[in-house]
Image 1 (cartoon, rainbow, N blue to C red):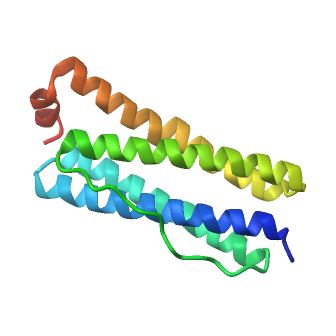
Image 2 (cartoon, rainbow, N blue to C red; image 1 turned 180 degrees about the vertical axis):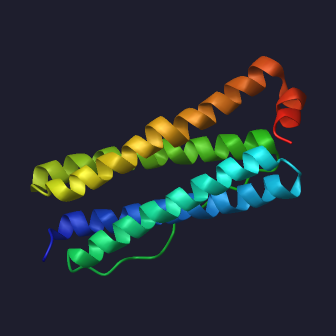
Image 3 (spheres, rainbow, N blue to C red; image 1 turned 135 degrees about the horizontal axis):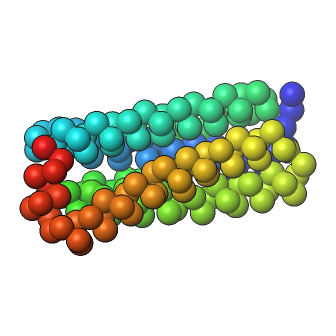
Length: 154
């Protein structure tokens, strides 16, 4: 089914963000594992897998719409410690959420309701799962202190 070229182009841009999120979560999860922080490693590894599934859904949709997926990922920011990793991931999630919201609007304008619903689901994952969890971790660090937080993640 030939899709709207503007929607296909936008989906290709979104693929880059999801691939960046996947790769950023991948490096951060492995850093946490290396630091002995098994609980946060498990959560961020899960987030990495979810971002990969988001990218996969976008790629499949582009193919369905008879487009060619663009596999160039956006830039990533690698943190140097727990706090900078969490902040970098949160900034990325805010960026992805904004782009998903714009994509939902574009799909509405172009009458592509199936793609719109897919993007809404990804936005829901971004807002209610990823972003909320990252914000909560940063609040916990403020409340209990970094050393207590790190100890709780071992």
